[in-house]
Image (cartoon, rainbow, N blue to C red; front, top):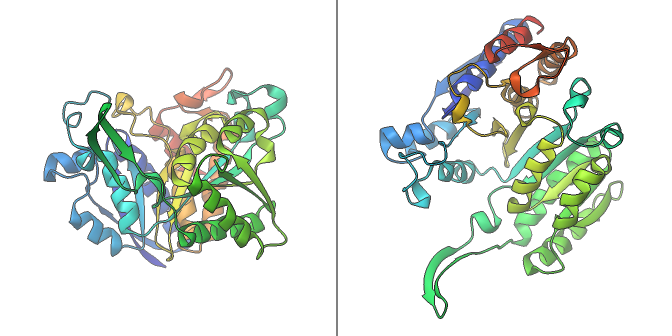
Length: 360
């Protein structure tokens, strides 16, 4: 198999962690007889410095011509003089919204699993952690308040600003089907998150999700208000299997779900649309404070590459080989700084990559 992969290394630790994932994919190619070609493209602060915009049209065109996209991280430090005064549409984060929309990636899957070897890093009480954490947040990605009408004006109270949350039946239907299909392959339970006691958009969301559920009689559906969900993730995360959310609710809750597992540096994500071409990235940020110091944990990006192998390239055996290599390294007690605990063996980011490569 031969595949062409667009690489958006981005900013901060992005180049380090994408290099790790590329090394792993090349090792997989050697072992299983595949050829992966990588094309490096600009996005983020590095793109702004070179082209004046966070996502050049050339990058979009080449991503559309690729089989899938590997993303590192974008964004600068708080107070970064290069970007702090830029208007919203020219900030690095605007590139993320634009690439998702350009590629038609309407679903974002963020698994949150407590690795047995890292149970001690879980910030929750031991009795809660022992019940396990194994959930997937299915987040609608190109609708809702992030893509709705926005603006500023002047009224009786002075200057005001507004953002608009809007969802169509079609948008909710397609993301709900993703969630229910995934639940069928897991533990057959979907928890749909909304704020239907207050928001009209959430009332439509709930109606449509219940309509979709009629086609999945084997999957249990639970409605849960977003504020209660934030509490339940801390109180009893074991109750969740597939968590279906709007764009903004998923953005917030998926970070919470990641944090209760013990390390945001361990968690991968995929964004998919109507085709096999997806965008794969770690859920953490660009961490400019540790960039270039070989401290970044590459595991989330490596596991994102494994998701690409499975979900976009239909290579489950190859994906499993990567995931098992990661598990072996953790079971042997190797740790990067962010997941280090007493009695374990701390290594640099590049050393962690080498250990994983040796076990594939």
